Every structure is written in C-alpha cells, then in structure tokens.
Length: 509
Image 1 (spheres, one colour):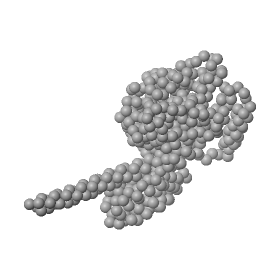
Image 2 (cartoon, one colour):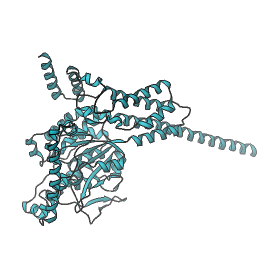
Image 3 (tube, helix red, strand yellow):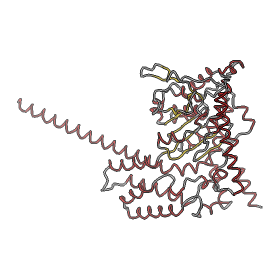
Image 4 (cartoon, helix red, strand yellow):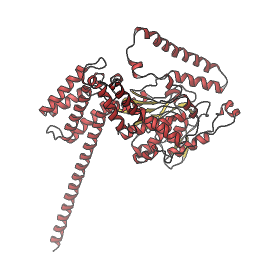
C-alpha cells in the first residue's frame, strides 16, 4: 500500500515538473521504486543482439588497456554504425522512464572514450592530416540526425516547445525539415542565431496575426477562404528576408521546406543545396498554402543584386504536407541522416497515431485481422481519392480529393516520434491567430511531451556529437599549425630581406 502511494505521488510529481532536470530526477526515482532499474541491468532482450554489443564493448576495452591505437581505429571503422545490434529499436526505450539497457549505455560510453583518446593522443603512425581524414570518413559513415516538423496550422506552435526542449539539452539537430506549419518554425530556426532562439521560444518579437478570412464566394471559386496576403505578412515578419544560402551562412543549420507542385504528385525539398537563392519565407508561404484555404503560390528568388524575381514562373506550389509531411528519403540522401526525430501535430493524423509498443511489438494472432484491415483500408482509400480527383471538374472538390490521396499514402513516424497531446477543444484554435497565452500553452506542452524522449535521443546522438567535437578540435589544431607555419615563413622571408638589405648597405659603404 505504501509503495503504491509513493508511486502515485511520484507520477503526479512527474506530471507537474517544471524543468527537464526536475522531471529526470523524479523519473529516475520512479524507475528505482518500481524495479525498472533491474530491467536495465539485465543485458538480455529480444529487441537487440546483446551478444554483439557485449563482444564489441569487451574488444574496445581490451584495446584501450593495450593503448593499441592502430587496432582501435580498425575496430571502430569496421563496426561503428548507428543501429549496430539493433540498439536503436524504439521498444528498448519504452520500459524505463529514463534510459535503457545498461549494456547499451556502457557501449556508447566506451565508443566515445575511444574516439576522444584517438583524437587527443599523439600516435607515431598517424599524422594530423591522416587523423583528420579518419574522423571525417568515420563521421560521414556514421551519419547525423534530422528533426522533422509536421503540418498542423496553429497547432504547429507545439513544435516550439519540442525545439526548446531539444535545444536546452544540446540535442537540436543541424538538419531540420518542416511542412506547412512546421515550415514556419523551421524557417525561424534557420534564420535566428542561438541567442535569438532563446527569445523566440518566449515569443519575443513573434508576429501573431496570420489569419484573415475572405468572402464565401471567393473560396467556392477556388481562390481560397483565407487571405494569403495576410499570411505572407505573418511569414515574412517571423522569418525575415533570407535566402536558403544566407540562412545557412548565418546559423549553420540545414533547413528544409517541403512544397508540392500544383499539378504533380512529387513533392520538392527546398534547401541551400537544391535552391540556394530561393527566399525562405517564399518556400514557407507555399508550404502553408493548404488547398481550399489558400490559393497556390508563385515562389520568389533573389539575385546577386538583391532583386526579387519569380522562381520557375510557370509553376505554382501548394502545401508541402500534401505529398511529403516527413521527407525521410530526401533528407537521408542529401544530408547523410542516420536517424529521424519526428514532431507530429497534424490534427487529422494525431488521433490515429500508435505508440511504439502498439506499432512495433509482435502482436498475437488475434491482432492480425486488424493489421490486415488497416492496410486494406489504406489501399482502398487511396484508390477512391485517386478515382474522384481525376474525374471531378469542380476545382475545390478536386483539390480536396488530391489532398486526401496524398495524406493517406504517407508515413508519419520517425525513429523517435514525438506526438502532440491535446483535446478536442484545442481543435478550435487550429485556424485562429495565435495569442501569447496560446503560444505559451503549446510550448509548455511540447516541452513536457519531449522530456520522456530525451534519454533516447541522447543515446542516439552521443556518438555523432563526439565525432563532431573531435573534428572541431582537430580542425582547430590544424588551423593553429598552419598559422605557425605561415608565421615561420614570413619570419624567414623578413630575415632574408633584412640580411640582403644589410649586405647592400655594407657594399655601398
């Protein structure tokens, strides 16, 4: 009885925590009280190959004791990849409130110790340039994370809390994508420095007025029910006048915005690689152009003289989430992404989202009919929407059918999926201008729902972060060496000129 009461009190305290540090402290105590610490200490599990991880850990520890740098490098290059032994399985992070199997955490800790040792130790068989090449190759092979922000109209304010929670723990990825409402947050992340982001999270300088409604007749004629000029003011005020190239130069973040060509079934991913001179606000405006609510958008680019011009003038663009809410494949191809964090707030998707246990655990035979029915329903739904969009002549209805087809055929999960929690009353806020109170509420909810995922994200991210930090130190070391060499050359040249000058003076005398 006493134990039950304590657990109940701890769960209540967990729900009321105001910071991640407080939440983590309570969560660790809850793991201890409920016996989940014992689960962490038991290495065995059906969800990963603990033998591979144990053997790799013992190998690295042995080589570290031997100080065998050459073999350590070989061991890392042969087996250092993100999901070795299936340690990235989300089910491994569904039991305890904080962390996972101790063996996995020990292995990651040992890999990071090994990388730091190789980086900071002078090895007689390895030059600085060779060491740099090793870490560059290893970093490229290992990959990096990406954050994907879904659409969701005003409910997209939830993303602000997710980003704040990740940013405070130094876990905000360098690669970020956004669709529809998510594109606005992505654009703000890409055009604000770390110092500016702190103010952004608190709503400082945030322009609130996004929605102005038009007459019913204009909407029925396919011109949109909402005023696009007001939406443009909203987007430009919050993002600024940056191209994707300029945004990357300012923040170092690879921001991506998904947009959909009006008459094509293939979405485009706009970033500093695919469209460097495209204005970020222009892409975000197109990505927010939900069919029926807003008319299609002509994108805007900026030339080297700062003049604005239409981008692909013959093409118009609409809501990015219609075709690619979470663009996993394109991000992986362009930026070598090894795992994805998805923040999902779409109001038509969230009610149907499953937990990791529901989605990934092997179900009983009795659950098979449900899974088959879900797959068949998806196939039939896509067929119906495709049939109707090809045959209707009313533009508004055709857009709705096309929107439905794109929605049904997508995958809405990441390797880590953060799903918004809100009640039906919050759906009323979906098409409202965001107030300060609304921003704060969604931000806090975003933070709270992210905290249980932090330990999992840290486990995923730690090796990649260590590789990046090692590369920074090596690049700094190389820069200092180059400066010393340049200074030496300049000194020698100056000495030679001085000697020659003295010689000329002596000759003249």
